[in-house]
Length: 88
Image 1: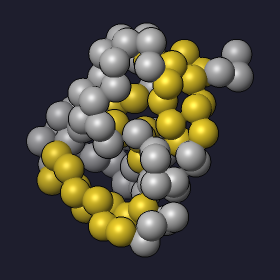
Image 2: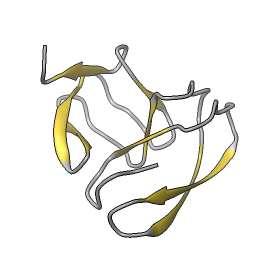
Image 3: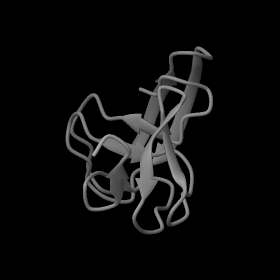
């Protein structure tokens, strides 16, 4: 599920397997999202909806929640190994 129309990450509502074709939903636009997972993503974790450059803001809920600590490609797992949160 993606929350905002500008989100660069979505939240996995089930465990995702590497290479799995995904269908999701953007809550704000009420649109269908499709992408292929490049790696496993656990339930509740984030998956990249677009390529995100190192240092670029990661957008969730239409807001920057932190910045990428490395380049992230569409379909990759986004978590503490690749994201420095704005909160801490």
